[in-house]
Length: 178
Image (tube, helix red, strand yellow):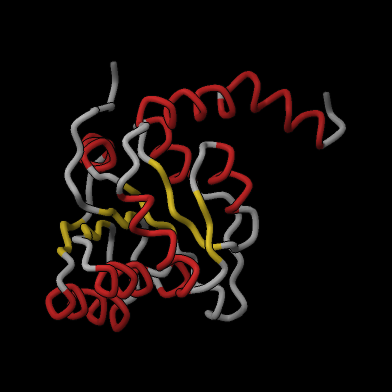
């Protein structure tokens, strides 16, 4: 039920705002080096950077699929083999908090390859994804992540760890409000 498919395209997906700190250029370069097709989706919120990403897509073999509405976003997540969240820690010492994209991908049964930035690993690893600390580490993880076929397990782990009631209770306890 919902947005979940067992049959996936052999493609990775970067989805998010197209701004330097989210790292679309990193996802493009990772996939280029690994020879893996990449869909890039999201609004172009930084003119010069957006132009760079569009150009890189054309030159480096990725495909910019535009800004997606909610239905299109979940369909793309359900069809991709992997979502890549490579937060750019080199951009003004940026550290990702918790990307909603990670949880949404997990509910679609799609594994996530992320960077070790801020709180991102906690979310990615709870659903069975992996994180790398730099381009070399992420590149080493990428082929194996693309070959994963345990989409049902990814979805089950996400439901188990991010069920709204459980998630709320856990956070209320952390905040001392529960």
